[in-house]
Image 1 (cartoon, one colour):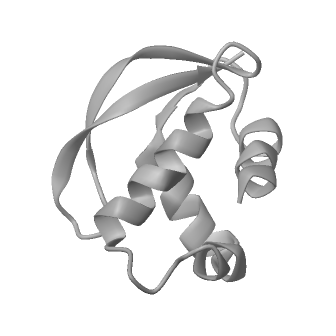
Image 2 (tube, rainbow, N blue to C red; image 1 turned 120 degrees about the horizontal axis):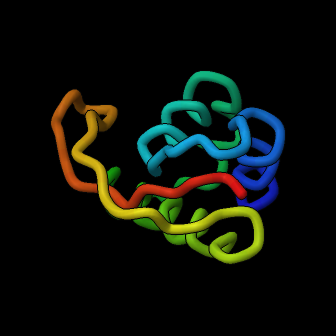
Length: 89
């Protein structure tokens, strides 16, 4: 999962663009669904799994990402929630 997230950030997100975890999760579901599904554990809720993905994104802070605040964005359940925003360095 970590390599997939790094590849998405480095190869798909334009430098200087702001995004949040919902963007990465949606990209994984649409374009790398096998990786998304293989990393899921049966006893996890969707919310917990997505928090794991968010923490993986945070590992890239100060290397290829910078934290820039919060967003109020749509998740995969079509509900809005707060989320950390990142900009690609």
